[in-house]
Image 1: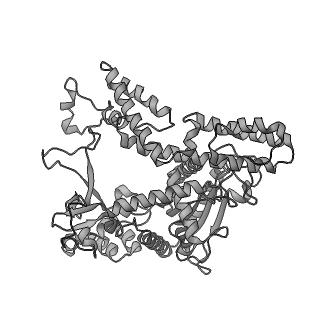
Image 2: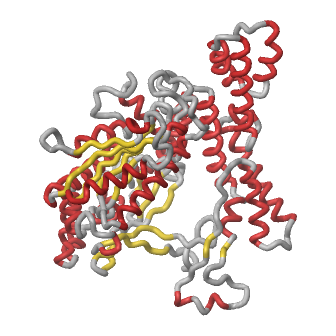
Image 3: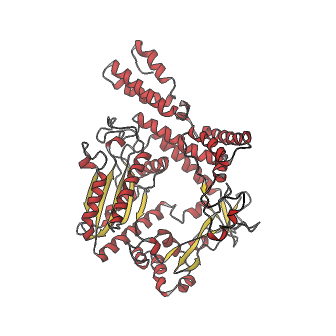
Length: 548
């Protein structure tokens, strides 16, 4: 223990005792930095009590040192506990059982699974009127109860809750800032790197076999889609450039906007990295919820005025992990000022008069094509938040690849979606149209062939225009994804999920001008790696044709 006044040692030991060893050093570092004994002891008391209160609501203090090996047995015991509750209440209704089981999730601050609302099609409405069957509008508790009895559901949920609790404590200890752990704490970064290593091991050791006998590892297949950072970044840039070309041809104007949370969401000061006295204890997930609700209100106000901007939204962290949004939006020139007014009014609706709000809460950059393209404005943010490639410098003196890895750990920890398209045509239709064979493209109605041709040529502008333009509502567009209910090959009945009561559906192709087109023609089954000896039946995937 660092040097402490002899009269304070017993007090300091009592404050540190409930906390794991990895919390002691940052607490004592702050303790020694205080100017007086009184200030140091009061600060230690406040922080220790705050952490114990934060953790003690749902876990014991040992959770701060939990690893994957500690989470797995707790998930198993929770699932078994749920089964015992059901066994002890044989006469209870499903609704009553559900209410008993969700108390288990309250103990861990987990979001319980919701019961399904029954909404059968008209053709089976009469059958649902039989005695004992569920009627439209009623709740089916079966799948939710089965989830609460499943150790895999508990493992996923507990893993998320534990890492978020650990990260919140690191925030309270001041370990997430540009001078300590940029975007996330070092333990959370290490947890994410271990998770990536486990995932890659699983992908390389899991094989899929299609109906032609070809066998591929999941790793080789995942490298062919947007799971691959290089492909994901290329696709985002193609779509951003396509929107810009649409705007130029239509005479629309572009703006680059930045939305930031109020100061009470920021745990550290931007210049020094010191504790922010205005911080109200919010975590990045709550900051993202604030921005999401804010944009929802903005979009609703825009639509009421028939303003439908299109473009992209990028979410990235401040140095202390607090999220902020960058939006590249295009709109008709005559609507731009009203759009900015609506954004500004809503952005300053909460704590809009606090110090610094005017400078930081909402920023606008008008796109001047004589100085650079709109796509150029967003390219840096796309690269910085995916893999850091194509950048010479990172943030806060870090290498681009290092900052990208920390951003990935941050987004994974808090469940934050980094990129989102606003308006425009469906990217799912775009991806499925790129899978069409030559024969399928030729079979399309003449007016719909530009959809497939533009997608195949990676021409997002042409694809958007063929789909009705950037502003047309999606329900009015000529093509949409086609989803098909899966059948159980053994019984011929509709396949259900692991939790039963939920019919499985899978993306199978497109519906273009009322015509169904199947783009996913292969049937895949999982092959045990020990059963496949690499006898030459599998080929290295050289073309997406193998994955259809």
